[in-house]
Image 1 (cartoon, rainbow, N blue to C red):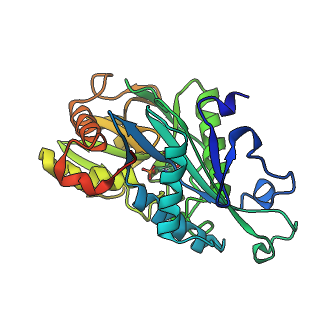
Image 2 (cartoon, helix red, strand yellow):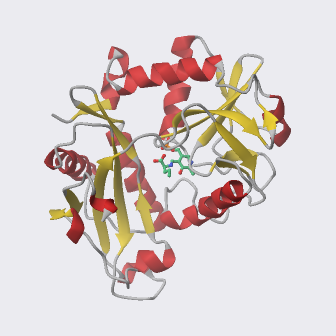
Length: 304
Ligand code: PY5
């Protein structure tokens, strides 16, 4: 019932279906085996609706499908237009989150997904903050991020998220807001659904792609915009204990946006309140997603 509050239609395999009727069968392959790829995209309302980096998200979804072997019957233009159509028909006039998903449908319990049709759905719904905007308390959890030699981490694939779910659950049951996962080597990888940045001696560092991270689009945004504010960003391995001595830490993600980290493993970061650099980047990010920074207008899809 609450799943459909604020949503009229969901796009399902090319049709707009009333939210309450947008269901799938119990024998859906993806439900059993995690055989799906998805995206998380935000739309920001400011007298119009602005979708942030829509094309980049749909390119990643197409790449994710290719990597896991899900055949997609839609191209980039089809998917971009389908998202715009879904958002328009719902007549949203507030901040939203868009969740496109391509999944192995019904027809077989075989692990061979070539025997199963791929289905595609796009849901969009009103959405506020994902993490506490004033800062989160995080725990380096005992579960490690799955290594890239076991899972294709460049794919935003549903099955991989069981790793994030158990990591977050450990953090929450220990009284924290969010988890940090180390990679298989013991270096910092990322949060359960966010990339991570630290600041030391005024320089911003973030783990490299090979540290078992998802190649986040918000991470890419921060790397590209930090220079405008006079900051240097370096991709390099981060040791666990560097978290404890960092001047600032923040997490990035479509859902999380730019969220400051104020405590790690019971140790206060900086002054224990959001750091000034994270704040500046967060403020600038806000201006960009609201289409107020001309040089980044190519990142915005205007809906109405
Ligand atoms: N790492 C992981 C494991 C993620 O799930 C996400 C995004 C990111 C990093 C950041 O990627 P991006 O900047 O491209 O969003 N997580 C999703 C999101 O919409 C789902 C979170 C529940 O933010």
